Amino acid sequence: MAYVNNPNGDGASIHIEFKTIRNKLKRWTMPRGAIVCETSQMLAELQNRGYFFDISKKKQLVEYLNALGGDVATTYTITDTTGWIDGAYVTQNKTYSPNGDSDLKFRDVEPIADSISEIKGTLAEWQAEVASLCAGNSRLIFALGAGLAAPLQPLVDVESGGFHIVGTTSVGKTTMLRVGSSVVGIKDIPHWRTTTNGLESIACAHNHMLLPLDEIGQAESREVGAIAYMLANGQGKTRMTKNLTNRKPKTWQLLFLSSGESGMGAYMAQSGISLKGGQEVRLPDIPAVPSGSPFGAFESIHNFESAKQFAEHLDRATQTYHGTLLDAFLPKLVTDKATNPAFASILKKQVYAIARKLSEGTIDTAVARLPTVLPWCK
Image 1 (cartoon, rainbow, N blue to C red):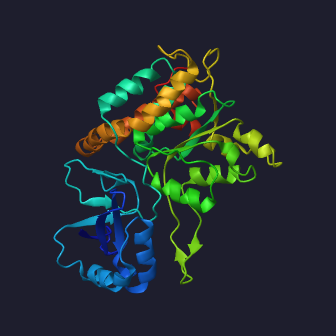
Image 2: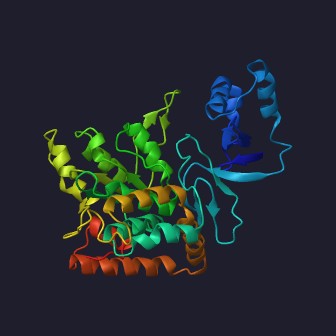
Image 3: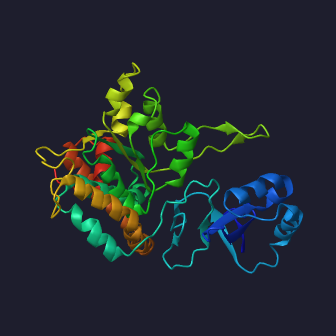
């Protein structure tokens, strides 16, 4: 257990750990105010997260939790935002800082991020079973690059946005997303089919991180354009609290990879809506199948007998090995940023130099986003 608060000194909370009846370790940072004002909701949340207790003893449990704080030796600072904070990079499960001494920890306000930033297996295993098989495959290499590019966006002042992978069914689109997700440690790929509120929470949980979104066809075609705008603009709606005050809108900066059988414009047209230039820039289409590829999204299937076997192997391997590359990349990144004052400006110059070459002098948002993801063959 630990006593925690936010960077402003507010938001006093108790960080607790417990095991579920299936012996899975769970963590929850519980606002102290909930003990006083929202006791029933607090106990219900504990139950929902897997902590079971004798309901006849709930009064004693509340009294025990309320007594915690002053006698807890461990203290640290909580944040409900992932990504870059005061020179450190915060994920759902770990904080990376130049000296390894940051007391920042992520607080999972909404239990939505259980399978984000998960580290499973070793880097060598991931390299052998996933990364090595991306060699010779431009789309898979692009997906790997996207996983590493998102933490660089705030350093080079590149706006949020994404790329939409377009292709018919069973060509390997979801496998591409899984490969990119394995860099970050995202085990379960979110889908387009969710509420706007739900997508806001998902986007916030992926701040400064890759957000994969599978199958645009599952979303309402009339809403796709607005969702793309919202994700790229980096801010949700302002909403009222139960006390009739404005709740601060959720914000994020991220890179998202989407997939679908149709491009965003074609899908929006099903509802009679025309694609606007701003939407196309925020989520440009990329063909899932490279020109002349005999194996769908894959130019090379290495020693596998078929593209299907190759994709199935990658699908299994990314579930078994993931998160290790980002875990190796971030310590180096935060150290370089802290020890070299010119690091961000040098990186930005490199990105925009490549962007100018790609755009022949005129840089738009989508072109500026590409160099953070490259290398990628034409």
